[in-house]
Length: 151
Image (cartoon, rainbow, N blue to C red; front, side, top):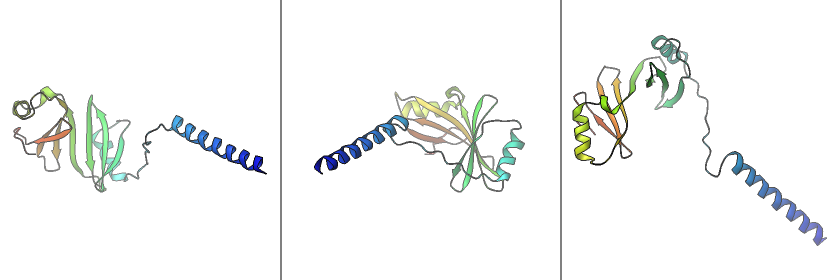
């Protein structure tokens, strides 16, 4: 009887260990990122098709009740925030560091000495207001159209 009980316990433990090992092999020891398909309104998709005909590989995400389309067009990475009715609320275009206004680069050199700009972008809202974003030291710094620091 004890032999049967011990055999069952060994079998259960072995199965559990194998299951954990297989999970770590397939998924990895860290949390897996699960991509969930979102239901993008036809109007939002139509806006992208109208603005960027023939563009492929658009990646959609939900953002504060709206939809963010990530795409590549003419060699630039773009991100558009679009509402369910298809209205563009914001467009973000990646920039080379050299394309940032001189005042942005001067501010970063003075206030974040020794740190490099990891990413830079130009952001245009629905009203046409332009701002600049520079990621420095893990923080997004925002500048107005003239390159003056906002936050």
